[in-house]
Amino acid sequence: MNLAYSVEAVADLRRLREFIALHDPMAAARVAAKLLEQIGRLGEFPHLGRVVENPAAHESLRDLVVGKYIVRYAVHGNTLVELRVWHHYEDRAGGV
Image (cartoon, rainbow, N blue to C red):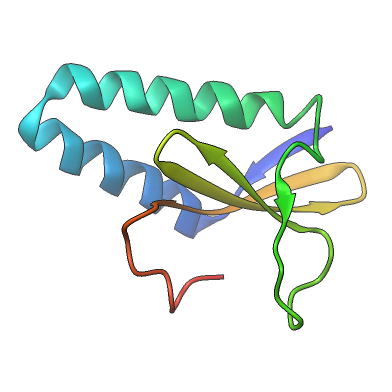
């Protein structure tokens, strides 16, 4: 399975790492590594995340919970696209 990242997902990962690094650079590195490790697992197990329960969402839209973070992704044939990443306390009303 091919992995792809949306521009928004890349920006989310950078934003989260920078925010954590302000308080604890080592924690920022650990969180980033854990997120990337778990995202990488999706290549082998694309249906690991739970289906997003939203009538407007396509069934290929899924959320993977990694600690306190949520990775939203979509499966399209042989490609898995990381759409967004956020901390579970963040307001994601405007997100995918």
